[in-house]
Amino acid sequence: MKKPTKPKPSKSTRRSRVPVSPHQHPPSPPSTAQGILSADIVKGKGGVEAVVVRLAPHYLIVITGGNQPTVSLACTHHGFEAEAFELNGQLEQVINHVRKHFPKLRVD
Image (cartoon, helix red, strand yellow):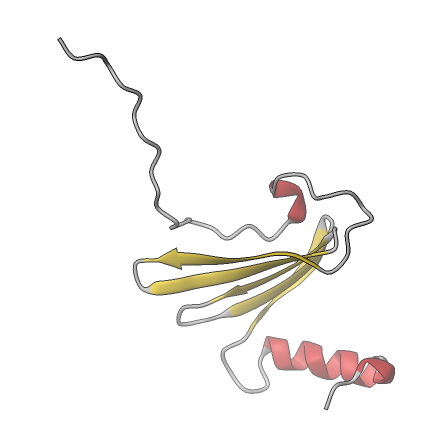
């Protein structure tokens, strides 16, 4: 009789929802860490679904793909998400707002 074996965990990288809050992930390195902590590509059946970039240590950028891509920026437990699929859409309006009210942050 064969010895029973443990079931192997699934190696699928498909996720039903891309997390947008840093508190949903494993603990970050010590607060002295700086720069990009990680950059993950979330793949699905149709290719890349999202890119998740974790920045030192409480900041997160999530870019989702598909027919209506979005960009999310988060700090600790709050942030915003903007649609990024049409001219003068949500993301462009946010960029224009920041450029107008914070001219030192402008990039041209």
